[in-house]
Length: 489
Image (cartoon, rainbow, N blue to C red; front, side, top):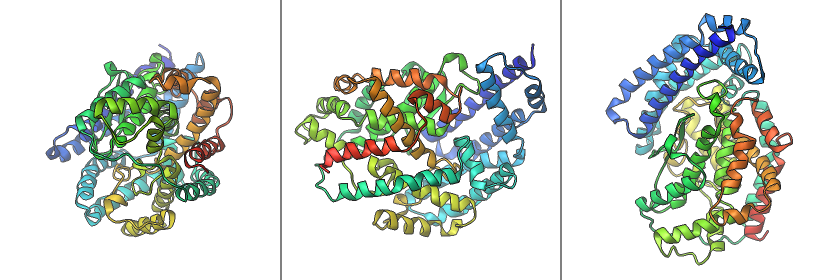
C-alpha cells in the first residue's frame, strides 16, 4: 500500500471513533439519565484521549510527508488531514482530555443553573471552561490572536477582524430596517394552545417535505435543538412549546437543513475528512436556507397554513396571506433562537463581541452578566428580566464553543447568496412550494453545494454554488425587500 492508502485506512478508523464520540454527546442531550453526568464526563475524556493520540500519532506526519495525491479528491483529503494534524499536535493531550471532561460536565451545570435562574451557580464552572479555552487558544495561536485561533476551528480562513468588518458593514442597514419595521403596523400574531403531540406529528411532515431520510436519522426532543452525526446516521432534535408551535416547526426545519447537508454528501466520502460539511458557516447556510428563504417563504407558508388547519382546526388566522405575515412577524424578544430574520443577526453580533473580549481577557467571567445586560439594553432597548433570557440562554459557552457564534451570521450571508442564485435558476419555485413540494430547491442545494462536503474550502464551496464570491449584499437586499413588502415600507 502507498503512504496515501495507509493514511486513509488509519484516518477512517479515527473518523469512526469521532462519530462514536458524537453519539455520546447526542445521548447526553436527549436520553441520558441525569445521574450519569459525572461518568459520562469521564467517558468523554477517555475517548478524547484516544482520539487525540490517534490524531497526533507521528505516523500521520510521516504519511503526510510521503503521500502523493492521485487526484483532486485525494488532494482535498490530504489538505483536511494535514490541517487537523498541524492544529492537534499543538494542544497537549492533558488539555484536550480535561476540556472534553469539563465541557461534558458543564452542560449539566448550565442546564441546572438556567432552570434555577442561578448565574452564580454557573460562574465557577464557566471560569474553568474559559481558562482552559484560553490555554488551548494560546497553544494554537503561537503568539497570534487567541480568538482567531478558536474561530479557525469552525470557519477555516476566517479571522475576528474579518468578522468584525463584515458585521460593521451589515449593522447600519439592519438597524435601519428594524427601526422602520417596528415603527409600522405589525401583523396579527398566532395565538392559542397547540397540543404537543399534534405539533410533533406535523413536524414529521415538515421533515418529509424537506427530504429528511428517516432510514438514516431520527427525531428526539432536547432543551436546545441540534443535529448530530454524518453519513448514514444523522439525527435531529426539536423542542415543543404549546403556546408557540412555530418554535417547534422552524427549529425542526432548521435542523433538517443541517441533517440534509450531511445526508447529501457524496457517499464515497463517508468516514473520511471531506465527508462532512465544509465549515459551520456553510452548514448554517443550509439550515438557514431551509428555515428562512424556503420555510418562511410566501409559497411554503401557504401550504403550511393548510396543514395547520388540518391538525389544529381553526387557528384564528383567516387566510394564507395572514398566516405568512404571522410567521414573519417582527417582534421584540430576548431569545436568539426565537428571533425574527430582521433582528437575528444583531443577537449574534452581540455574542461575538462579548466572547471575543472574554477570550482576549478584556472581559472577565465575573463581569459577564453585567456586560451582557448592558449590551442587550444598548442594542435592543429592553432590560434583561432574568438570566435564562440573558447570558444563560445559550448552551455554547458551557460546551467551550468559543468562535462558533459568528458562523450563524456568516451562514445567513451565505444563504442570501445561495437564495439569489437558486431563485434565478428556479423561477417557478414559489408555485411548487405552495403545493408543499420543496424538492426543486433541496435538489438544487444538494447538487450545487451539499454533495461536495469538504472537497473545497468554505468560501470556494459557496462561490462555486452561487457563481460569485459571497458577500453580505444579497442577504440585506433580500431582508429589505421581504420585510418592506410585509410592512408596507
